[in-house]
Amino acid sequence: MTHIEELAALLDDAARYARSVAQIDPQGRLGLDEAYAIQKASIERRARRGAPRVGVKMGFTSRSKMLQMGLSDVIWGRLTRDMQVEEGGCIDLGDYIHPRVEPELAFILKRPVTAGMTAAQALACVEAIAPALEIIDSRYADFKFSLTDVIADNASSSGFVIGPWADPAQDFGNLGLALAMDGHVVQIGSTAAILGHPLRALVAAARLAAQAGEELRAGDVVMAGAATAAEWILPGQSISVEIQGLGQASFKAN
Image 1 (cartoon, helix red, strand yellow):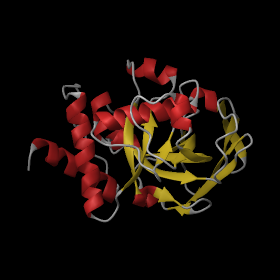
Image 2: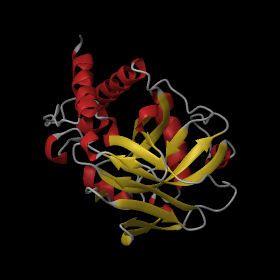
Image 3: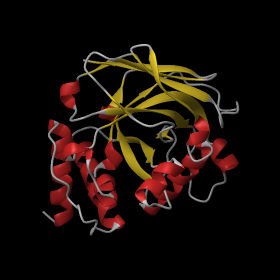
């Protein structure tokens, strides 16, 4: 095995068996290209087990998070078939290490979105939009990581839930949303928190995918990024997001 393959296997096994590992790059010495190579190799291991890529997710899409991490650009990860949780379904917390949840907006594509498209061109490729929840679960002990650590670890992505699909012709640039746990609202925000408009996240996703030699394909799901801070998931909780005019997505934790 190469060094890249060894680290990919380490992180893949950590996710697969829900066991934390030490940071692989605490000093930030890996290059971004190397970190993304580890991520890609890890996802390829899943694909060989029958869980192919079905979309992508964006990370660090809030300006405050970018500043906190010292970034000038977003990051991305891959969504695989085994990561999707049925809307209204249950997750077993034993399958995760220390999961959190974030409210998001999801796209599904009817045509490929390619690098260099404008927001309007990208929108013309969208089949529908939906309220969504992303389960994030860093494989690193204590949820502590460097930028290259988190990129290698598939941007902490572990699961996603998608609510009812809606017509993307409506204005979704500044929709109010609420994240609730057991019926109590714990976060309030807006889709405008996602790079100012979720379409910017879609355009960025196409650019980053192209840099990796991939494309956003018809049928792909794109998770646009967190609209609020993440919340810890506790046993027995019912978790939901409601987005103005789009409806609700929810799941339960056992």
